[in-house]
Image 1 (cartoon, rainbow, N blue to C red):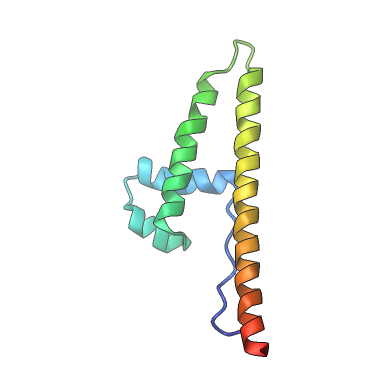
Image 2: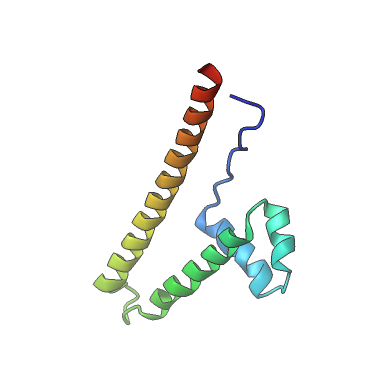
Amino acid sequence: MSSTSKKARIQYNGKEKIKILRKHLIEKVAVSEICDEHKIAPSVFYKWQQQLFEQGQMVFSQTNNGEKTKACQLEQKIMVLEEKLIRKAEVVSELLEEHIKLKKILA
């Protein structure tokens, strides 16, 4: 690989994302500081925040016995699958970019 290739991305799990978002929402730390500290783009931070607020309603949509309703389960599954699809598209895009670079170098 060339020395200009992109660095490997850090994959944060759900608990880590909540911890990062909490710093801004509760501790009032600036988004720029958080993004620099965790090496993430502000757009990623705001995407996580949007997902938190969209999925947060499911916490309050639980039935009395604590089980999620069928609709909430489906919404959550859809969100997980959409995230996987986005991640897959990003990886394919990066691989294609590297392939084109190598093709130009070898040509």
